[in-house]
Image 1 (tube, rainbow, N blue to C red):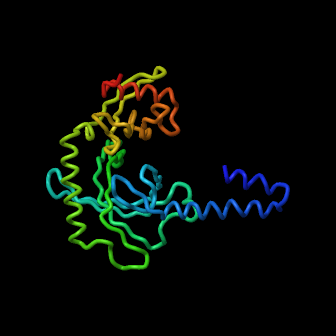
Image 2: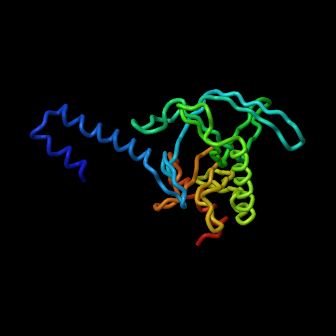
Image 3: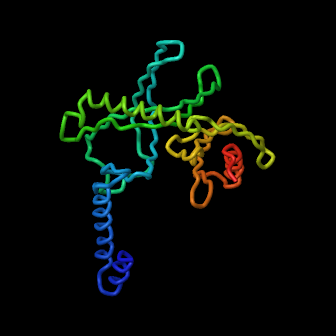
Amino acid sequence: MATKALTRKPVRKVAKTTRAAKPVKATKKDVSRSYNAFKEFDGQHYTGMQVGRSHKWNYDKGVWRETKVTPDRWELTYNVIKRRAGHAPEGSGVPIGTGYHWFILSHQYVEKLNANDYTTSMVGLKFKLAHKRATKDTWSSSDTAQRNKLIEILRGLIDELEREPEKTIPVPLHFVHKEKDYKGVAIPVISSCVDGVCHQLDITLNKKHVGVLKYTKNGWRITDTPQGLVNAISAQIEEWYELP
């Protein structure tokens, strides 16, 4: 309400250029303050982007290399520049030169299309082990501390998956919508599963990635996907989880 009042009153008394400048300065200040403010989640204090918000990135043509080291184990490296889809709000984000060390655990589903091409879909988790400030050359945690944190993460995840196996069980999809046959899979987003039901699932239909199906206060939704198709998918999900 305060922002609206500031934009209405100057219409009669203040020049147009002055009116335009005030909201911009306030927005920059507010975004920066919000990003850097201390927040709390399950007793843990943190700064940066608020828990629950999302990023979307576009990756350049990267290089993925992998070596088979056992019949079922591969080692991989991947190098690429990722680019934000859109633009960061002015005043938000960390300084240029800041670094992060993540550990990624992910499903990777692939299907061969021809002799040289495969579809690839990944759904998983990433955990921050350490960060490096732009003004420093050292990480926030020692190598030993990072290793111990990773061990703690893996042990906790094993316990979580043993207690809640549905977090890693794909949901098969097969239905007809508008006289077209659809077949695919819904991969649970692990952190979205509560009491045996996953509220976010990554959807692939007829060998094409559709998007993430999310349960919202307005029902099931997938960004940029016709609601009729979403309803057909969600009906299969609800049947799988035996929802009323």
